[in-house]
Length: 242
Image 1 (cartoon, rainbow, N blue to C red):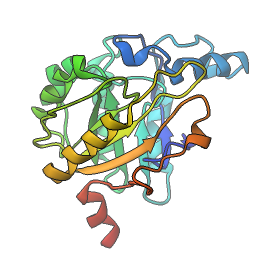
Image 2 (image 1 turned 45 degrees about the horizontal axis):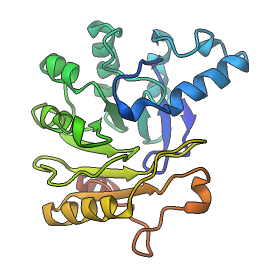
Image 3 (image 1 turned 135 degrees about the horizontal axis):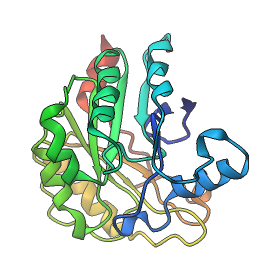
Image 4 (image 1 turned 90 degrees about the vertical axis):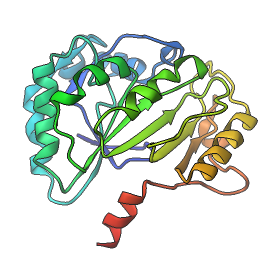
């Protein structure tokens, strides 16, 4: 586990690592770049670079946390990658099921496999399931997510590399938007962001603006309309009040 600088979560937990590229959003994958750095640093978990691996020893980690956490699961991988056995996915879900005090945020680009196996998984209230959608070509991921039994469903529109007009936000609880960062980031048009924000407003969906991105993402910041948008799903607000 590790404390996270990602704005919409508190920490990361990686019971698997590694992935392969499947769509345009993967072009400058931050996890792949980070894996190479960690391998160069001699970190044993990344000795195989970005090759897909599972780590059963990591399954015990969430049981050790003394206070409730908001956790991004597999920041360095995709839990629904075809090389990760279904039995292992079930074990990861069992850990999440048995730790209802934590919120687990799972994000995938492999909505097809998610849809294939979701009925074999137990979807407790604390598992938030999301899909990454970087442009109009992969909007079908949203339709597949919508059909699952996840109690909270969210979209990560990052890196946003094209407009996403007329999103179907039915049964979607949360939308995150962010621009690409790094040495050669693809630009994000402000009109795309404003349009998505307006769609969320009309559909009463929580909207979170993560960053403008660019080569200097800190300098570019995350203000939109002169303010930050840190909205979370209503279930999170309810839990905080309790």
